[in-house]
Image 1 (tube, helix red, strand yellow):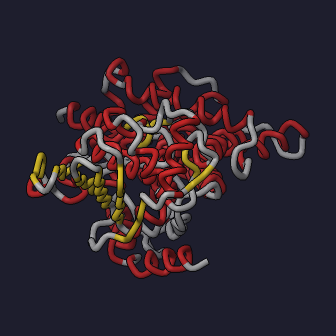
Image 2: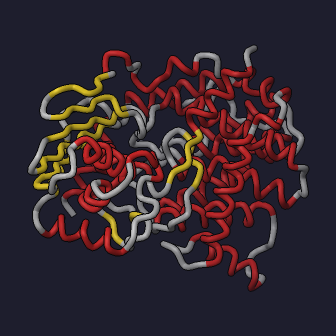
Length: 422
């Protein structure tokens, strides 16, 4: 087994991001288009995005602005540095925000649904008094496939792309991931260590300050009152939900995303961190456990797709449940049982767009992750006679992905219709 396969997967899918990745990807597309449009005044900026992107970019706060909106993400992007990737909006100031809002009031920005079957597709066209540039991002939030200036292609890599990049992850399965996390030198897991540091900082920020629905902060305050216990489960729920509270409400701290989602990165990381802290585990064991969580999440997401009508936090929490199993001393069989328990429990949670309410879903998923791990370590797993569960956890994962890929397009349409017609 080539451990570099797993290290490359981590390197590709663990990406530092500031803000929700859909509006940030829109900002990145706008920043890239502006980079190639020259120094002239922006006269017109058009955004065309897939339904899933629009759904996730409508209602989530943009870092440092106290506001949401696809128009604002695009306008800010046109003022930003494209080289910062998913941290593209870092370093913007009040003047930049005022200029962006002036662009919106002036009718410079327009948004429409793209005519595409892709779930993740963003096209930005910027017209200045000097030139016109066009940029397309698709399949991954940083995957710029087309750059055109005045109709001439500077870059066009669409023919080289494999949808969802699933071919990069053919070596990923439960057995191989387990063998990797058992044998890898932890000195090679710098990105995982960074994910712990960044995401814990976001969680602690959410515990200290009143972001969003204050899901995590409320749990901690109820613990301090003695209303609920200061135990492993409640602390994990509080820390993880608080990270989502802060991020979705526009906190200016970056987090480590997983498979294109900051909430997935937070959910794959912080339940495992919280359990490790409560049990005073070594740094090495914690690193291996969080790596297991990240890789299980990447593995399932590589089959499931970047965006769906089903909530991605359920998949990241499935990874987290496997990480908790490892922290608790469980074996590979218990990891398989945890996956069965998770996918037989919270599968079907809808994704109705990115928003501050996501923190409640993250909290629910964290609770399920730890409960599933407890059961799995006792050798208890949902039976293959039940619902979508198969004898082999790999086959159960395939059933989940079939639901996400084949069974939810109509649900997505209905959700977006409801959101657009409020």
